[in-house]
Figure 1 (cartoon, rainbow, N blue to C red):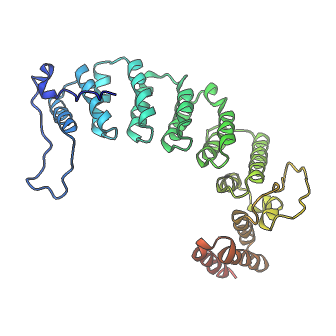
Figure 2: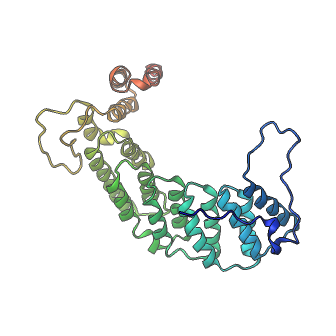
Figure 3: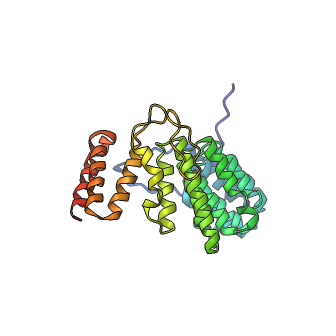
Length: 332
């Protein structure tokens, strides 16, 4: 395969002959010199020149795109590009098309998503954005910037049509990986932080639905920290005591019975066959239930559970469990 020829320096381009480049200022003997490539030095020298001149033009868009492709985290290039797009009334469809490519290529770069957000605010078009985000998430199902952008789209436009399919979307992502903490976080955002206000009866229905959903997922993968955190979140957000789910939690704090009875219990699904038990997260949860009761007998039970974590089930956090024991004993 024949390699691409090196790009023509801006200093050798006739259309840039009117611009005097401004080199990066560096001391004669910099303590930690940055080894820029010659291509990057050339492009940024001309970028500094157009910024100083205040030029906003199509060729500036070409220049900023060049700089961004060399360094997608170059905040100043992104900001000046946005100002130029606005100033010359550049077609927003063209900018979104470019951002489709760059977001796909540099999906872990914050500046890419920030610029995309600014362009969407101008275009006021969100119809296809959720589909685009779903496509990007296929490449990295846990990328923070992509999930954050999805939440921004939902909250900023706040259209019923956009919210309608979000729980189904979360289910799809969870079916691929039930341990996807980003998907669990997004579900909490959709269900409890979307700004939707239900009546008291509806709220109770939603809480029950979410508790059942979480318990069922825990029964499939008991050692999934994301699900246990979600369970806590549902209870805390709705001001319910941890003891609400004590009956469900207890079977996960002991070894799996040799002869597991196939029970069908929607409210409190038992651990499935082959589950690795006891579950450290369940033991911690039950200890917190006992601590919440704040009685001597219950504190003693919590201490016993924390000791089991420190000495057997979660020894890597031994110092933390010893600290919890110390703090709990102060309550007596």
